[in-house]
Amino acid sequence: MTTRKAALARLTETFVKHELEPSSGSASVNPSLESVRASAAAVAKFDLIYLQHPAHKRLFAQFDFLRELGRSGSGPKRAMRLIGPSGAGKTTAIEQYERIDARRSDQPKGTVPLLRVALDRACTTKRFVTSILDKYGDEYSDSAVESTLRKRVYRCIERFGTELIFVDEVQHLNFRSSERSDPTDALKRMLDDGLVSLVFAGDETALPLMQRNIQLANRMMTPGDIKALAIENPEDRAIFRSFVARLDEEMVRLQATARCSNLDEQRTLRCLFIVSGGLLGRVVNLVRVALEGAAGRGAEFLEPYDLSRAVREWAIPQRITKYDPFSQGIPDA
Image (tube, rainbow, N blue to C red; front, side):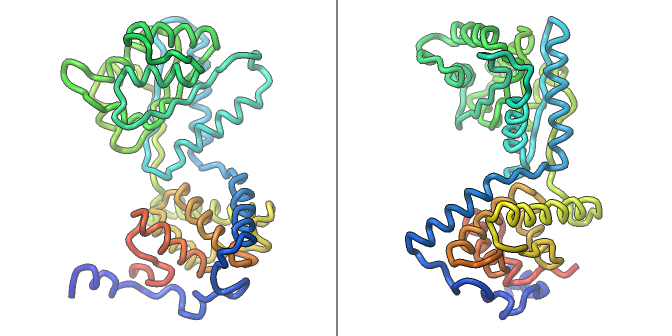
């Protein structure tokens, strides 16, 4: 028996066959224009949902602190890192903070207090600078040497009153690094020039970049890293269950589903935890895919059938998980 088959043999059944059959709507998605419209409408409502990750409130306070510190004095600015796996909620936190800040009444008209820059793969320090200029709408961001572009960035920061720049996907800045030319030196210099504070967001592959320059590390605040919830931790399990239950309630409130889907039922919770690896963003993404299928077949709510199908047709092909716990079972406790 192969290792793979041996592992599956130790799984405990979660849902029996009849529980994985649809009880509402049709038995499968009808690929008609009507079903496509129903799916799109449901997912559009779903995308209006924002549930605060337990780490977000702490992050928002750290972002506010960076800005207040920057306003309080001259000299070098500070930075912080925000590291976590894909689906941890890093970008969602930044986007929500931008929305919160836009609602604040104390921002002068015409200013850009927050700027978010997502780096492309194989990003050089020059491309990092031009990416910032692109966000400001500079039409000539590529038409100068790096030192000149940096001066233009500084003028934009002063002109638009930018207090905080979020550098998303910072791991891509690791391109062409060497002992003679390290992108961390460019980041440190930007802080030393004293114009703007920085937040570096990325996945775990960004850690070596963030940690190898002790001078940059000395300019960093306490990390704002987001970690996966641990299934063996009772407090983390409670957080996970509360989040999933609220997600279910919000779908009903926004009429993405007609009634509660009981996503916080014990077996469903365990399966969701296994598929997501304890990352709440991955739960949201999986439920979104399941909702698309459920709405397309006219179901009133999400059923184990829809979640299992989403795992098999989305999560496994995307290498988010290796198997479907809804239909194949869960590991013995």
